[in-house]
Image (cartoon, rainbow, N blue to C red):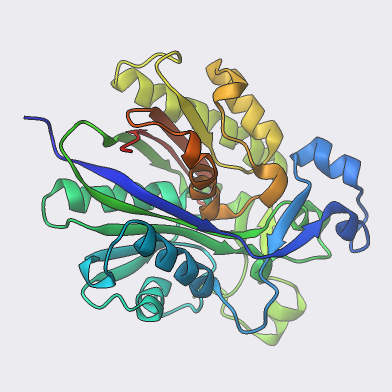
Length: 329
């Protein structure tokens, strides 16, 4: 008998309507369209502009669409995992807020904070509840409102990030389709290169932290770039080796959409054909935990049952990893 796997049985995504273009950024910081495209591959990013709206509002839209699409009642959901670094509040967790907004009453929920690796860590975590046989319907969300923690006078970060959200439904599968294996890693010494300085228990919010602009993303690009490429190439290689896969076996590589040069370097490092690599960074920028589900949702019409897919990511922490799955529909 085949081992019970957690299969993705549905996916949905959402991005806000407002498009922040490179031309508009030229008016905010010392940059230009050509430079941004050559350095990052990004042409525009979506921004949640509506006052009083948060990550849970984007996620609620996605979850409602997902439930409708998969013909699932909110009462059937047993667990919801929200992967985000821009939760509505420090506490309570955003997962519970989402459950309330969409009428999920019989589940427990929690958040995962693993920056750009959040969705991948959440997908693996959610799959374990299915594999254990204790849960039958689990929702995993990757969502971030990065515009809420970006300094739009800092050209190193404001050109990169956008807002967006995606979610999957996980259900049991015994036909070999589903999440097969993951190699996940972390290195806390990387925190100095990518973090938010204030707002936590180390440096609580004060007039001084606000005046010093310490509630925004801080990133040292060169250190992150090198670690990201090495981390993703290494974990993809490990998960392929462990599952006796060659590059010809893989139908799609789905890399975190951080920067086109990182994506190209990872594909080159693995010797993957670019036609097999999902890339939509030009439209959305880096949506942190949202990038992987946004890619899968966009490519869903092209995916076929049994397709072998590897997801890979790298984020603040440092956190990184790769997951091998076979598409279930």
